[in-house]
Length: 318
Image (tube, rainbow, N blue to C red):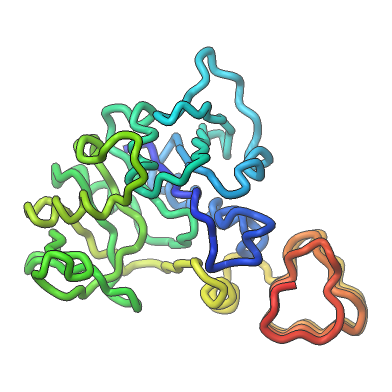
C-alpha cells in the first residue's frame, strides 16, 4: 500500500474562532500545520502519494507544499471539480475541493478514479499520532477484508465493539443492537476498492452505513494499536492539552522575538511571533507571526489573529 487519503474538508466548528483564519488541518501544532504530522506518519509507513479533500477556506491550501508540474490531463473528482496537485517532501499531494461537503463516504467516492484498484490508507487530518501504521497496513493486506480500523483501548469515545478474537468489529455505537463499545476508533483505517462499490455516487454520505453493513456480515476488520501517542485535536481543550502534554518541538521557536522582561510559563511561541517586554504568558499558544503587546497578561489563551493581544485575558482566543 503506497497511497493515502487525508480527510481535510471539515468545517472545524469546535475549534472556532481559530478555524476562521485557517482550515483545521492547517492550524499549527508546535509551529507546523496539523496535517504535516499526519502526512509524516503516513510517509513513515511507506506512503508515496496522497490525496486530500478541502472545503472550508480551500484557497489556503494554495500555499501548502510546492507547485507541481502541470499534468497533461488535470485530475478531477467525480464532482467534476478540477483538482490541484502540490508536492510535499517530494511526494505528490492532490487536493480535491468539495464546494458542497460530501462527508467521509462521499469524499472517498469522489476520488475513486484517483484511488484506482489499489488499497488506501485513510487518515483524519486532525489526528496526531505515532502509532505504528505499517502494522495496520500489513494486517489489512493479510486479512483480505474491505476495511481495517485502527483502534485504541483507552479514551472517552469507546464506540467500537469487538468479537472475541479482537480482529472484527461487531457493532458501532450499539446501532446493530449487538454490544456496547469497548474501544476507541482512531480515525485511521485502511480500505480496499471493494468498499468504494458500497458507496453511492454523487451523494453526501458518511462511511458509517457501509461500516455497519460490513460489521453485520462479520467483515469489518480491526487492529488495536496502543503503541505510540494518539491525540484527536478536534476541539480547543484538546488543542491546548496537546501543546501541554506533548514535546513535538521547541516550545519557543528560535525565530520568535521575545523581549527581555517578558515572562513565559508553559507556553508555545511560534516563528516570527513577537512577545514584548513585561508581557506574561501562562499555558498559552502564540501562532507564527502573531504579537503579544507589552504588559499583556494571558492565561490559557491562543493568540491567532493579526491584531496584537493586549490587556488581561483568561481562556480566550485573541
